[in-house]
Length: 168
Picture 1: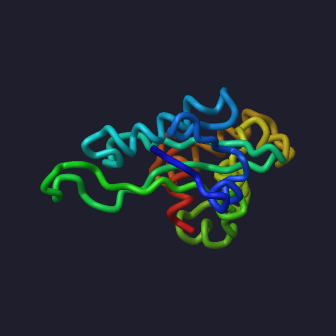
Picture 2: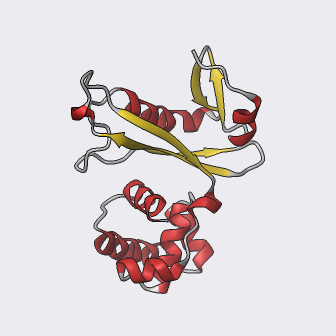
Picture 3: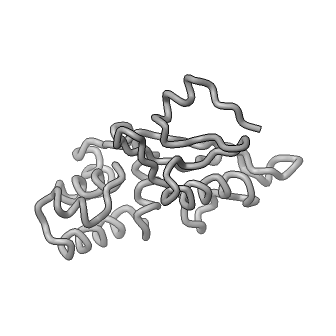
């Protein structure tokens, strides 16, 4: 049974609520993705193995602030005598995800435009919204995203967000 402290409630900006001892996204339309993150943390024998796509949820606070929730495996489940996965639920604000363009360019060989797009996606923007903010067409954004996937060895936006979260 969960009982959130006032400090926890303040930190999550009302994006997550506890109902009957269970965490839920405050917005119904975001809860399915959030429950997938929680499920990956608690049910899979190895929730964060390399061949499984990472579970990532975007959460919106009452004031419009965006948070990103994902899990990080901290112990190889196979090494534990009881076989249960040990992981941490991470909830981060977009500012924490924002990454300087130069390190992304150096680490992955991204162009400045690709690094800006990747950073916008990591901050929780949709590809369509990121394209508008960059002043490019949606098709140009898709083309850049394909190049980003190739250079970062990812195949989905959720994987890219997780990579950039861990990269910073």
